[in-house]
Image 1: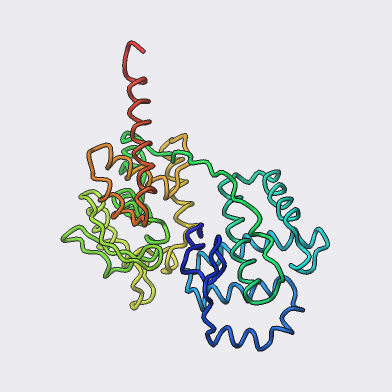
Image 2: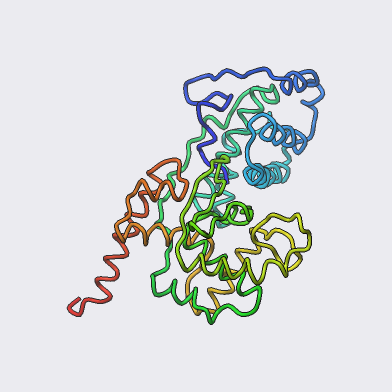
Length: 337
């Protein structure tokens, strides 16, 4: 998902009190050649030009562009409900009403802030490309975003979740390898489903993955994950694969790459089977690994590198989780509390 990181000095838009240069590439020249006609386009058509810009000029990841599309389609639908047919007819009050609408609809502050990022980047694009005369989104401030501590699993809960008895049959062996690897490496689900066979080195218990921004990192993993992975490769993957040229590591029962939704679903099902009364997602395992590493004396910089965080402040939240966990365990176990 995108974040405020996309509003950075490399973005060719006005940002804060600075006006950033826009290079007139072939894409821009093509766009301006037909600018008169474009100004008459429907709201959705202007959005498509924006999404093309993010793909061609900014080179953003597919998932990031999907997130922009999802949030901005919601905004466009809101405009239509209010009889707005041009972005030039929007106002600061209207956008504020939109965020009030999102809040009434149950959206949390963090998600509202993400929607505002989308709108701000979109309006700056439209201003530069002369679709609008004024960027009214620049007048709107970001809401205060709450920094909630991520939910984690205890070591006991992890052992229950990863118990051999929970995994039956060939797909069960595949699923055990997936859960073991997610917990052992802290990978994001998008990184896991894009792993290829050549990315894994079972002898040295290391893997290579591409994170956000196509940044490559090397991650170690432990004995349990390694054993589950070897069993999957030796006994299961050959039964799933349909195309001999298929290089993706984890496959579904049709021999294709697993989807993000598929991994979310299987983790949810195993958490339910294990009797865990928590919402468990791939990111829960990522949070859990980071917290367990820091609890056991891992260096903060090493955890940052392993998780692929660009900013160490993102990693530091796990130190707060660790302190909170120690306090809870103390009050749970100490007999005189």
